[in-house]
Image 1: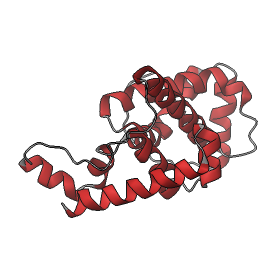
Image 2: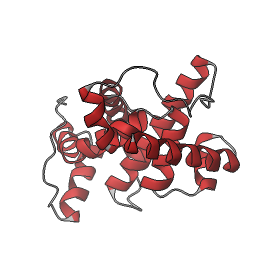
Image 3: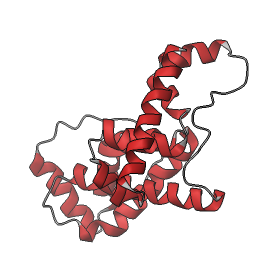
Image 4: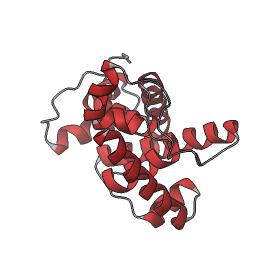
Length: 187
């Protein structure tokens, strides 16, 4: 499997995608590589948004596809492969974030309202216009809830189940994220 995350056209009809999945389930590595090429960029975008770091996102893409290969037998075909892969990616990335927070000894950044205390550079001025750059500057908990709720469309109850936080905490993190994003983008 290559490490290239180049996007390819996914104009194949569903039967062709189903055929690739069926072949990959039987151990066809080339079919799985085709699935990787078709879905790698979308998985990378998801990981980048949730993790906020290019290198971590690239590493996470590899981890997601390794798990996808190992768990391909559990794909029942009730939904599209892309949907199954997206859900797998969300779950694995949330597991990674939980582990990182456990290691750091905290879950929610209470200093989320404090903007960086350094002089802005030319890159900072351009980054303020860029939503992805602003998202990357959010504390992990706030960024995760914002993306899951406002971008991915999960409810607060679903976010609570996925992350282990209370629905009220998810609401508070979403409020913090929106307020901080506005400050960063207006900056």
